[in-house]
Amino acid sequence: MRQQALIASSGVLALTIGLAACSSGGGGGGQDDSTITVAYQRTAQFVQLDELLKKAKEEYEAANEGMTIDLVAIEAEQDQYFTKLALMNGSPDTAPDVIYEDTFQIRSDAAAGYLLPIDEYVEAWEDWDQFPENARQAGLGDDGKVYGVSMGTDTRGIYYNKDLFAQAGLPTDWQPETWDDILTAARTVKEKLPDVTPLNVYAGKAAGEATTMQGFEMLLYGTGDELYDADSQKWVTGSQGFTDSLAFLETIYSEGLAPSLDVALDASVGARVATELLPEGKLAMAVDGSWLPGGWIEGDNAWPEWEQTLGMAAMPTQDGQEPGFTSMSGGWTLSVGANAGDPQAAFDFIATALNRENSLKYDTENSQIAVRTDVAEDPEYLGYNPSFEFFSSLVEYTHFRPATPDYSQISSNIQVAAESVATGQQTAEEAAATYDDGLLSIVGEDATQAAG
Image (cartoon, rainbow, N blue to C red; front, side):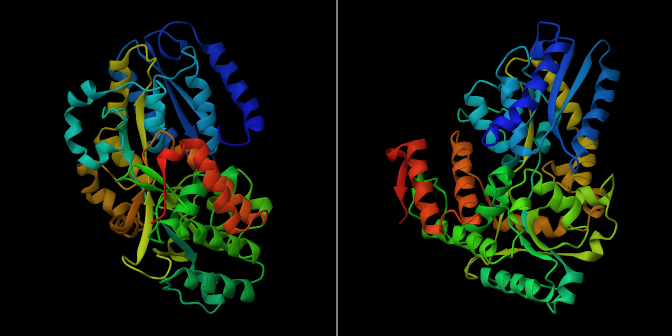
C-alpha cells in the first residue's frame, strides 16, 4: 500500500486468486450468508491472533449449527498486510465479513466504505459495559459511529540486554534521562563490543508503521512538538522537534550505532529483532513495543531466558524535560466489513472472539494492555507476564497518533524522511523540508500551520 507495491502485488494477486477460487457468490467475501470470512494478519512471530480465532471458530460453529467461519490468514508484515487487505476490500467478491483492523486505519477505511457501523450491535451486547470510554473511542469513525471493538492497546519503551551492558561496563539497572544518555550507551557498546549492534530504532520504509511509531514518533513526542494540532485541526510544518528527531536517526545510522542497512531496510526487520537479534545477543538496545514478550513466553520462538536477560527502560524526553518520559500507544480492533452478508452473525463472531475468556487468553499471550475492565483486574492476567506492570506504567506518558483519514499518507511521508537520513541521502534539515513539501501536497496549505 505504501511501499514495495511491485513486490507486494504478486502476493496480493495470488491471494486474490485463491479467494476467488473458494468464493461461491452472495454475501460478504463472495460467499453465502452461512459463511463468515475473517481476514487477519499472521507472521512468524505473531501467531497469537491465529490461535485465538481458531478457538473462537470452534466455539462459534458449535453454538451456531449450519454456520461456517472461514479464517483467511494473511501472511505479511504490517504494511504488506494493509496492502493486501485493501485489495480484498476493493471488491465485494473478496471483501471480508470480519476484519482485523489497526485503529489508525479505522477512520480512513470507514470513510472509504470498507467498514460497517456497529452501534446497534454493541449497544445490545451485554459485554460492552466492560469497555471503558477510551477503549470505545479507538473504534470510532469521523462520523462518531462505532466501527470496531478494541482488542487491547500497547505502549513502547527500550529493551536492553543486561548481559551485554555488564560486559560493556554499563549499569544493568539502566534508565536513560535524555537522548544523549542513549547515544552514550550506544557508543560504549560499539567501542567495547564491536560485534554487537548497539541500538535499533526503525527507520526504513519497508518497516512501515513501525518506522513511524516505534521509531520517529517515539522521538518526536519527546521533544514537546507534535505532528498535528488537535485544537486547530491542522498539521504542523517547520517543527524543530521534527528536525531533531530526524537528526537522532541520522546520528545513529551514520555512526554505525544502528543495524546495517541490509537489515534496517528489510521488510522483515521487526521479525529479525524479535526472533533473532535480541534472543541471540546480537542487539544491545531496541526501541520497541510491549507485545514482544508474548512471542518469547511460548511457541516456536520461545526464549525462556528473556526475563533474566532483558531490562526495560522508559524512553526519555529529549533533554529530560517534563514529564521525563514518553511513549506511543496504538491497538487493533475487530470490525465488520461493509459487504458482510449477515452483519449480525459477523458481529456475533466478534463477540465470541472478544468475550472475557478469549480476551484474557489473547491479552496475556500477546502481551496486550487489556482494555476490558474484567480482564485488566484479573489476577491471572496481572501475574502472567512480568513485563505487564512496566509497560502499563507507561500509559501516563503515552501519546496517540492523529486519528485522521489522511494519517496513513502522512505516515508514509515520515517513513520516506526517516529512510533518507538513515541512508545518508539527505541531512535531517533537508529531509524535514522534503516532508513539509510532501505534507502540503497531501493535505493542502489550508490544513497546515507553522510550528509556533
